[in-house]
Length: 206
Image (cartoon, rainbow, N blue to C red):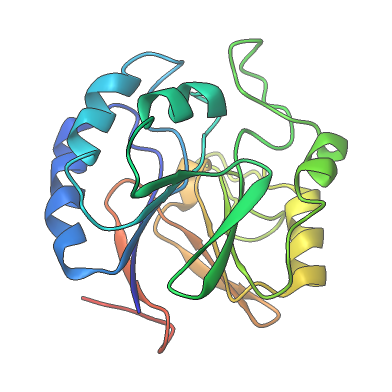
């Protein structure tokens, strides 16, 4: 089972077109949020990604809301927009939570949640699923370009308690493309370049 993982496109049409090419060789595509920038440019970037025929799982970042993402993907049977809920594809359970966790310093425009709100969003997350979270767990692939650890304590707690087989995240650009393990769970800060992950072998496909 091969997964194409990405996050934080921020209206980068060239990166989206490259992902369209990469998607031809995978089974499932996962977008971990921030398709646009400050709620602008969502339609053009999704117009490109809509040409992908494989099943796709999208969650909102802090730059778009779940409602906006669902509206843009309305009518696309191969797209599953998750935020505080899950779905099953090819017999694999997925669970998604979007937005910035904890609340970012960017202001009211940012689609953010406190750690307490995040606990509620993750309440129905099953064990051993694939978690798609815009925000990384605290202390794992969460170091900013200024050297600060900006991940979520709630996401880390969920990973420790639920033992997901994989966590796909983004949000912290300084750690994009990095892969670490927390106990037995692989954590990938996907980034806009995209990563193809072999779920059976737990390795990057080059």
